[in-house]
Image (cartoon, rainbow, N blue to C red; front, side):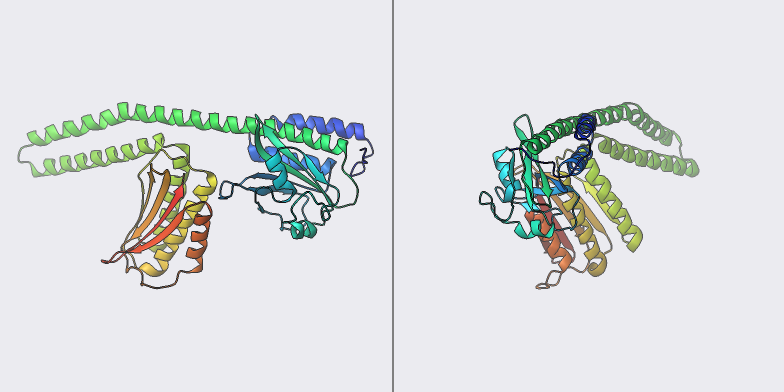
Length: 382
């Protein structure tokens, strides 16, 4: 049915021309989040009052979605809202992969009313949801809410579908650009590591061997032998530093991001407490979603905070490794402190961390050593 524009416009033709130009601009973005934000900005200025993108939630065991990139919202009630499969209009459209709308959200019989309170808090009366689909795969759902009474029609649905199609192409371009960029960076870093091994590594080996020969010919001169021993030690340290650098250069982008974040936390802990904290990366070839990386980093920070408060430790080791079967990331924080008291209740920080880990199908354990010390360990599915 025909329908007046939800938001009055003096010059619809000019608005539509501007909309087309903005659509074209979306495809030029090489950043997924920028494309999503541009999408909701376009539809709130041309179709409705509030808009959002529902993306698949990688941290949800039920495979649901989460609302992001809200624009025009009045409250925080919809921020990061989890949408179980099939729930509400957004969840329904995610499952069906086709546009759906309701002209009176609260009396609609074709949807669940899981989110009536959230929609009421935002003052939304009618809602349109359109899937964002690329190559038969639903990347997300564009939701458009209007706070006045009325009816959606073919014009509004067509506009929203056009925007969704354009942003699907933009997100595809962004994802491919990021994958290509990560691949190129990883290849270049691997090339540099190989060059360092063949040039600097060979040079250091030659220096060490030469000084060993000089030490043998130094005879009984104690000063010369001491100086040569010192130089050999420094060359060995340089070789160790070179191996560490080459290992970092060969690391996957996901492993590198995780290592950088954890090393910064270990350094901050050492500077803050005077207790040395060392990071050991046991696996450089990690594939880890950003949300899981953030959970791992937050868990380590909480563990270090507890070591600082309770352990009385002289040293801390943070280790990161991967189990192949099943594919799981293990992060452990081990200290040599006083250990844990049996039966001591967990604090709020540990409980919150355990809940976050459990939400993505992982687990957190805390074990005491009979000889003293504690190991905090999380396992996350890669």
